[in-house]
Image (tube, rainbow, N blue to C red; front, top):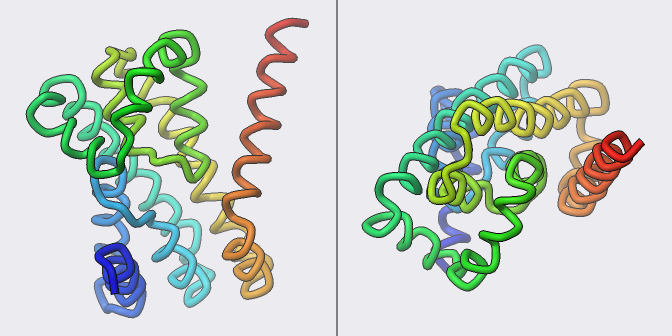
Length: 194
């Protein structure tokens, strides 16, 4: 069993723990800067177990994910050569990083929004935002919007549709978020050029 599978199983076990909300906060925070498993893995079973608290769990995910994103930004801004480079190399994204710079300077805000919503590694974007000097206030605002959309959408769907929507999310999460992001970006471009 490899490291990621063990980490995934450990994360999933925490959904049953009496302090699950604190594990959810910790994982949401850590995933935004270095941890490999997204908080959705914990959010989904917790929201199904307590539908009344689903929106609260989405709030916790959003808040701590953005705080972790600020840590990722700080790593990129101040510590890229000493810490950030190791995180980027761990995920084998070092080649993407240099190519990414030109796109980032032109579409930085949309890239942060996309990473906040889609399965693209958000930690990569938080570190890149610091390295490329994206305005920190814009970074925070767009991170709140992107991460909030992601986690609240999952919580609302689970609240209303329960286990049925869980199966759809499990099977098609990546496709659904990418389609949603394409529609979102497309609408921004349409509004911009009208």
